Image (cartoon, rainbow, N blue to C red):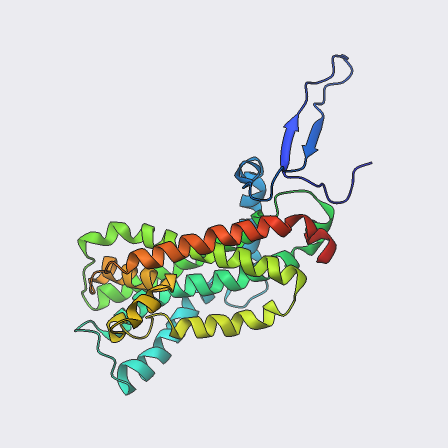
Length: 294
């Protein structure tokens, strides 16, 4: 009789039976030999499930809502209005000649992609507890799907930024083709943080309460409403440890031509990669216990 939670992620098949009445190939599920082994092969085998989870997250996000997917546009617009009034008009943040609404939205969109996907990924395992307890599949697919689903919202929000650039007659820079690289860096960071938080949240439900507070603090440690050149001296190195600093500054530079990223971008990239791989390692080290603790 099959167990509730297969103790493995390594799938191998044995030769089919020689009996003409048996046409099915038996599947043997074996335990991994070490928790450090990444199960990318399993994700590829279950790629259709991953696509379904992404599609499910997109549909559930706007199910039974009055405005539907329009929230992907309304949310950044409302935030843009608030930030423009407070920081653009009242605080008078210097943006070196770039209209503040354009400056702010160019940093707000990658940040919003990161913040929303981290929040979704942190609660993804607990929200999928029913299938985690009953069916075997690579658990890594659940928080990964939450992050990939955020690309849809980002694409809709990006239309607002393009419209704003047309309004201000602000052409994109020749480096605009680098935008996917900075979006990928934001995705790597979101995946790493999502792996950490979703795995911890499976055991300690305090995470769902702490995540919004953590993201809010992270916002003000990221140059979304202000330029990064306000940070001077040795503080710049500490500031660059925030991987979203490199994402936001790089996104602005590639799109609207702000100050080019410095060598501190390498610090942000290194931090993002470190968060990703450590989150992946921790997730897989506790993955086999999810069905018991969720």
